[in-house]
Image (cartoon, rainbow, N blue to C red; front, side):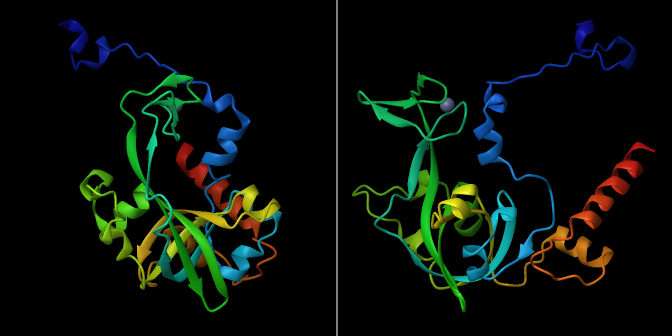
Length: 230
Ligand SMILES: [Zn+2]
């Protein structure tokens, strides 16, 4: 089997570009990915609620108590095995409208609605699979109950303080949609975002909320780029 040889001189490199067309969809980039890696700013709940358009697709960090888990809402959802987006029931089968296909064995993922509160207000947040698993170390399948009741383990998230990273979407800003998507969560308030630490050590103390000091961040990125290519 010459093809499997580890000898570098025999190696032929092939580069595949695997795509399902999502990247051509302008909404895909908009919804799925933050604009660029940038230190997340620590904000109060009221600052998140009043965030201006310049925060769209930015992540911010809130330190808040989860005062309630909405047990009347769904706590898990079925997603497509190809594109990982929600499937819908059609003619008794799960169907993905993005892939235009029946999904015979959709994946089950957490989708929990919670209310986070600090001294400035409260906010409806969506905790998805990774965030819930970070907190309770369980998969959906481990919490399913026969009578389909709301799992106590999820309810137990209530009442504690968390550091929550939220992604501000255009819906949040333009339509004042009250649900914010959590992109990370840890228990307690001592969590320090590494990117924030970097920012603090390389910048003068500029804490203006209106001016997220884009120029110095760009400089950081450029210097990292130079370093990487040398
Ligand atoms: Zn799909």
